[in-house]
Structure formats: C-alpha cells, structure tokens
Length: 220
Image (tube, rainbow, N blue to C red; front, top):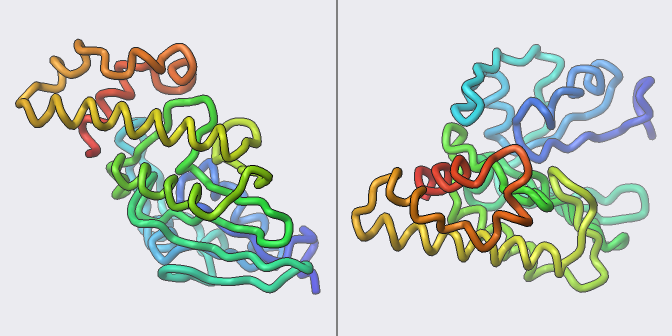
C-alpha cells in the first residue's frame, strides 16, 4: 500500500549527491521508504566535500537518510514489475545504483550516464573513470535496442546513444592514460586536446573540455 501524503512507497537514490537526494527529507517525512547503497547513507550522515565544485555539503537531517541500504544488489517485486537495483564498482561515486525495470524494459542509469554532456567523475566520493566505463559496459550487456535508458542528466535515451557515450569515455580515457604513462603533466595532457574529436557534441555542458580532461587525468 502507498504510505504517507506523498503517494510514494519507495524512493531509490542512485547516489548521494544533493541534486539526487534533495527531496529525501520530504519523501521520508511523508512515509516513503528511502533506499540506497550503504555508502550513500554513510556519506549523507557524515557530510561531504565535492572538490569538483569546491562545495562542502553538511550532514543530512536524520529524516533524509536512507532507511534501507544494500551492498551489491536488492530486488523489488512491486507495481507488477521486478526492479533489480545493482551497485557497480566505484564509478561516478562509490555508492552508485543502477535500476533495471524488467517488465517495462527500462533502466535508470543514474549519474554513470550523462546524455550529451561530459560527466562528473567525483574522485572526492571515490569515483573512477575506468569504473564509469566498466559500469556503462555492464548496463549495455543487459539491455536491448528497445530499452528506454534514463540518464542522471540529459534526455531519456537509447542503447545506441549509451554505446556512443561508452565509446567516447573509453577513447578519451585511453588517450589520457597513454599520455600519463609517458610522464606527461596535467598541463601537457590538456594541451594535447585528447577529447577534441568529441568536444562539439559533449563539451557544451557543465564541464568545458579542458576542465573535463583534467578531471579524467586525475581520476584514472
């Protein structure tokens, strides 16, 4: 049965960032069960710093904290569908969750997928570029051409578009990793423009290409 005045029974956090947990307190106080990976509750309870935005986030109030947490996966048999919530290895953060809706053939990828934007890889929250690539590849392995792919940022998407995003990440990360292995400094890597082939499509969002290349360099 639905709980509380919000009409929401469960609310799943795909990670701890404030733009994805900002409504937790309202949902929690209305009686919804907040669900997230173990590290989401830990980070929210403690308060965090997001170095990429130079922001300090205070501890969340108790009513905003997830009350149901999991380690690797949890399954919901709910609303005539089966929802499998899976935690990848550290990717966008160390507390990411991907939600697969079996009957509806939908996947909510959270912030491992930014559609049309260079993504934040939050090293201050345990994130990793290689982890992002691996996490996206695992989603691609589970979906088909009819799957609706919901990103953490950007418009609803498709497997084809998610594949293009994966290939972009993999290619730019590979170039930057090669330059790092040659002993190139951050400034030298940025000057080499390893993302140039993708900047026209992906580089018009929150992170300018040079800023994002620096982020990938520092979050291998």
